[in-house]
Length: 116
Image (tube, rainbow, N blue to C red; front, top):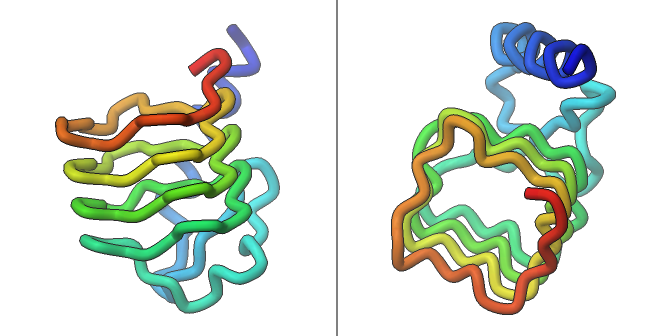
């Protein structure tokens, strides 16, 4: 319980300090995920075939986002709007969708799920 409280507190603080550069950061270390420099989250963002463990994905609408075959283990989707997002063949092991608005038809076919 204390661990989750600490994680949520960190995320809350991180949301206030995230730069607007568009980089995707790891919530566990506050480091930019290599290969995401300059990527701005938004509708139709292409994040397929990417290694995004512990990604903090908290910015607005990700309508039509493509996460196909990406590693999203331990990622946090918070305060996001997901409609028509593609998670086919993605690893969502222990990913959190707490506070995310997930609408169908979002493709969750052939994904790896444990403890979501």
